[in-house]
Amino acid sequence: MCTIGYIANCGLVFKNRDKSELVEQELITTDSFTALRTVGESYYAGGINRCGCGFVTAAVGKRLWPKEWLSASDTELISPSGFMSEKLADCQSVLPWLDHFRQCTNWQGFNLILFEPGKVFFVLLAGAKVEIRQSTTDEIHTNHFADFPGGHKTAEGSGSCDSFQRLNFAREMLQKDNSSTSLDSLQEALLTDASGGNSGLWLTEPKGVLLTVSSIIFAIADKRYYYSDNRVLGYRTSIC
Image (tube, rainbow, N blue to C red; front, side):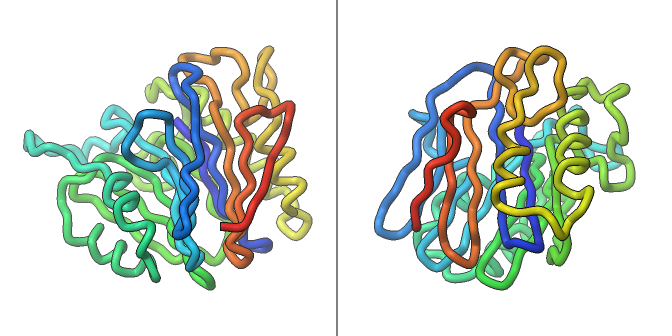
């Protein structure tokens, strides 16, 4: 369960990653790309390459899909994370990825943000449902489809209270005055402690079944990342 977004006025894409337990994260850095994953996993939760192309992901379980998107088919659903992870190193544009998404009809549920220099796209995947839009304004999403017809609009009946709280907090913090959003204010928001009943994006104690394990920000134009796995220590940074 994650919070992902794009801050248009400063060209920043971000992800706070939440897991059901405090599992160790690692940055994989090569000559071609930098990507984030849980130690032992084969796929990336987000990444950027030397061309400035990259992605972040937020999974959406089937219980949170609109009923009309569900199918009786028992076809195995495909995760887009594996596909993008395999293609990241050599990607020169995310446009072929968008074509690939359109051609498949059995996707796992995901909100995605894909980017390259000068272009950012929001992608919704759920079975045969594929929605793609080029983003010219802010995008902020968690693990539901609240912005689409049939999607849960509130936590009631969704079993996902934490997700809606994070979404509302992020939109309030980051969109209250878009012209003032900066790298510093984004980092402050993403590291805001949500323990003790507070509103925030970093879950330092179990809230529901989730803990925040990492936060990453990609500066598209600079091909730079900012990464934290400890909200007290803050972010460290490097160029891809």
